[in-house]
Image 1 (cartoon, helix red, strand yellow):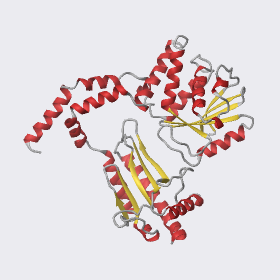
Image 2 (tube, rainbow, N blue to C red; image 1 turned 120 degrees about the horizontal axis):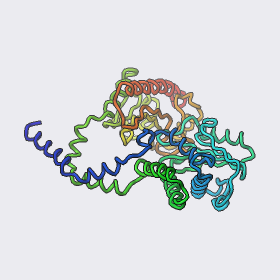
Image 3 (cartoon, rainbow, N blue to C red; image 1 turned 30 degrees about the vertical axis):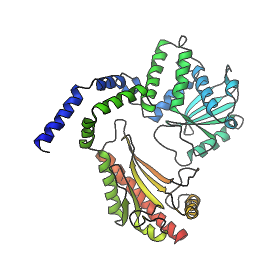
Length: 401
């Protein structure tokens, strides 16, 4: 960089810092004291489940009885298909729930609410960043049916964005809906809710609004800052060291050390695709780009979360021009019960991208970090993928060779 470029860059940064009232407004908006931020539990599923258990338990110290339980349960029932409802929102309205027990991590289920009258049992699986694994929803459903044969069951899959569960009996529910239900409940009962509980709930709702939901005011400030200081921001992002690039390279280098004959394609700073070259000799060519990159049959994608907080490896069966053969492959992997090295991570299959393995590498509340511990996890994940790939190679030869 010559002296003129250096001076221009410095001037851009100075203007960004000095002439930027919107930046101060944004910092004030997101920098307010929040107890959940201060305790570092915004992205911790266990802590969210603990808070919800406290809120939903009529016997807890909030002193509001079944107020919050009724409000949230009524909203979940309203959004659930009628066939899955153990009772209707109308039946719940004004009902005196008796014998309510709220349990945490019972039989590994995040939240379980057992009610004696009416005889209803509600299982809630809470997923903020992690995904389903090991057919857990199916197992939890069987467990609930076995232990509560005389209760009408209701299964809730709580996620940030209302992800579709693999098991049809589970009803999707998202944190935006939870926020709306709680905010409405607090507003309608403002005079009866104690000041301390009101403040506590205010912090929780503010945290949900700023971290898990769209916020028009914050979006407006962000747009204004970027519109007025685009060059300075582009310079910052361009020169800022991105840990994702190093982690992708770490993963690629480890795979190459284990078995050199891999094909890598579609490399970016945050992802790459990879396939053993040997698979192309087993599976038929299915598109015109087969010589340039993996054929699209079974290949892995190493991704970093778009918010730069997570890293994971995802192995998928991709879209093809031969759907019948693809279905045969997917069915064979499903029937193998992981003897192929891979296992379908969801029951509902699509004709485009079907996950057969997902490994979470790193998650950090303050952003993804390229450190020794994270790099070690990347190498370990590459080892797991390599081992599974060796099994898959033999599996492909048996079924398609």
